Image (cartoon, rainbow, N blue to C red):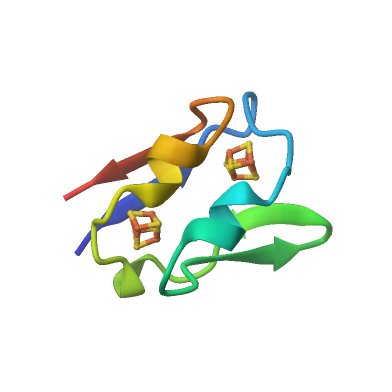
Length: 60
Ligand code: SF4
Ligand code: SF4
């Protein structure tokens, strides 16, 4: 299963990852962008590529 992590020190909650993820791995919790369900991840890396602050790490 993929491991998806957000570096909270870098993340600005811009929601780009929510927009680009085709399988809704990300969501909102207490007004913060969080990894909701990494088990859905298809390793497309769209979130990593599109995060403007390089805050996301996707590992196989
Ligand atoms: S795209 Fe990057 S900076 Fe924007 S909410 Fe997602 S993790 Fe945070
Ligand atoms: S790698 Fe693709 S499927 Fe996985 S969390 Fe990022 S955008 Fe979603």
